[in-house]
Length: 145
Image (cartoon, rainbow, N blue to C red; front, side):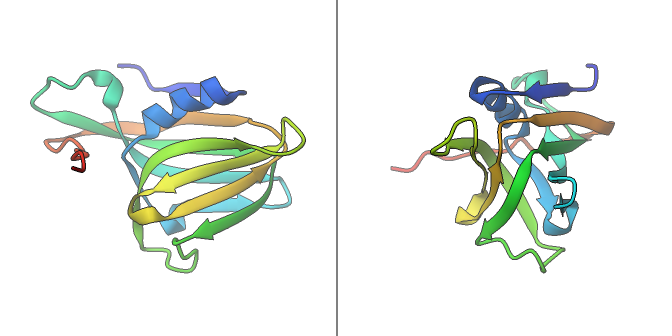
């Protein structure tokens, strides 16, 4: 399959990017906030869900998430100084602010951690930046009872 290149300018677009990044893994050190440029970046190894679920082998690809128009970044449960800590991204979520289109984009991580980005609007890009590699392991999310 061709490399993925997506842009999100609203909540519906962001939901598509969120689905493509579900179960992506990254180290805390793979995130950057360039305050002067109002840009947050995240390099991750994303699981290639769009290739289908009925295969015996699966694929991961290196991907770059770029979020623009970022005013500030907070993390809850993820320590920015622990650069080698590995996180699994579960979802991207947009919380509208009092003055649209401003709001907060949340990167929801496993273990209850969240990275919150206060943004002027939704302006998000996702692109595969490297070749893929095979993995036999497909992420699973057992249902709680």
